[in-house]
Image (cartoon, rainbow, N blue to C red; front, side, top):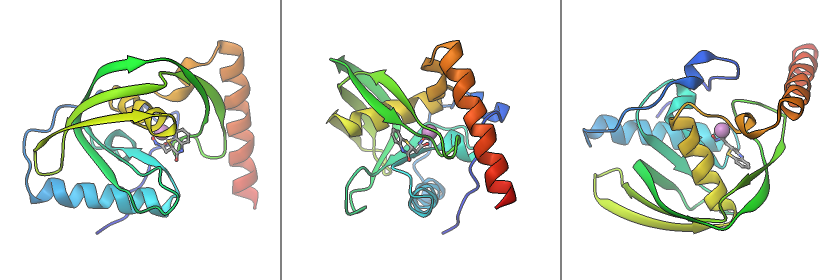
Length: 169
Ligand code: GNR
Ligand code: NI
């Protein structure tokens, strides 16, 4: 297993659109294991391949308290969305900053597991937020794209400040 390095905003590679996975081979299994290891080490609840500079449609998530309910979705597609919710989101590519984002309350997702088997996932609440956030990364989209220009510029200033503090600590 290996820890992968996470791209940080404004790295232009975060804007890449991921391609579908076509091979469900040991290399993919290894990559998914590395994504989980990287996500858990960073204390994240989700991670998209895009964030580690791999532009294939792979995402992992674990919203459980015990950090023991890993979910890996390959080639995920949202079939249905319902309702709306506001949730305070963070992102490992924007360390230390958070913003309230409005998204669908529930999603029905068709995907494949790491062996290529078709799966359906119905998620609501925080897990639905996480899946939508990760699927955005695979499209080259990040959570701050939903903010008004004013809110975005305030958040990016806070990000800058966080980085300066982290650098001098
Ligand atoms: O660790 C993460 N926490 C989080 C909190 C609220 C909403 C979404 C997330 S996902 C984020 C990890 C990450 O950046 N995934 O892309
Ligand atoms: Ni993110």
